Image 1 (cartoon, one colour):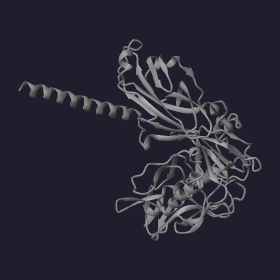
Image 2 (image 1 turned 90 degrees about the vertical axis):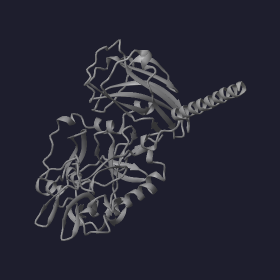
Image 3 (image 1 turned 180 degrees about the horizontal axis):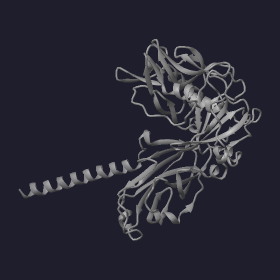
Image 4 (image 1 turned 60 degrees about the vertical axis):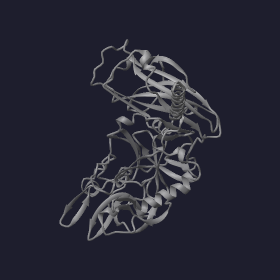
Length: 461
């Protein structure tokens, strides 16, 4: 009986050690495995996986002593150098303007390929940023990464109870990790290069959109829900970009400082939609039998991107951005008028903010490729039913925008630009030119002057 008892204890002990080993192994795997693809991003030479997200948001902050802070769960950054040269990476933490808490007690610790002993955020080195939503940017540390090498860093954040014993429970802390190679941080980014050529642009008076532009006007600023954006208008001779062995024109600078470009000549010809007998076919996507379907033109764009950009390993220079396919509408006398119809034709009031929609087609799409909106054509100097051979978007082709116009007589229509540079309305099943639009990463740098003979070129890493 005693032997049986001893045997049972030994067996339980062995099983305990086995479970502990499995648990520990699993824990180590969780701490070191690549994060899900949805939390991945590509920044120039770096493929980055965040264990949670690049955004950190805290509410009802409870300060703790440093010994407890050190025990908190880390934010793990897994970074791979996908370029052919060794690169020095900067990891920064940017405080966003949504933050209402005093960050004087914010404490940082980093371990892994970047080591940082427990330190107050305010005592870190200040970094430069042009993001209007960032109130402070501090350098957590540097890592030198060889080609195809992967490094990991665990970063912990907490508020030191000794520095801030009483914190407003309603206060909000919001921050974002920023990763950038040191070389890029020294040279002006693409957006900075463009803005440096436009001094005092904030004081430049907005044009009247009731009239088309037939003259050289340059770059303008427009406020959006996400911050300031910029757009080129009229005759422009210094917004040429060479990318993927193709010539592009700069449309403007997005509010996140990425640079929007449109192909100078069409990528080819095709239909917006093979079907025409429903308003849904003005959508870049639509829902059919509870399944989201890419419309004909979105399939064209995605396939073109794959073979032209991704195939050449240039995807790392392109950022996902929001494309507006405004499908909100009003209905009068059997005639469906989309918001763009009123905004472009009646009000002559273009917008860069996309309204939300409850429709099962259209709306805001976040992807790496899209089309111009009719609003962007107006901003660029075009006009509805006005021929314009002067402004930079004119290229002698009739091409689609992604702005729905109307649905009438069982025919869906979108705004297009005709071969005289005039905004018009065309059936979605028309065979027209397709001019892809991309947004280049906010961190890239360029050479060149932007003229046709000396276009901007990305400094490839």
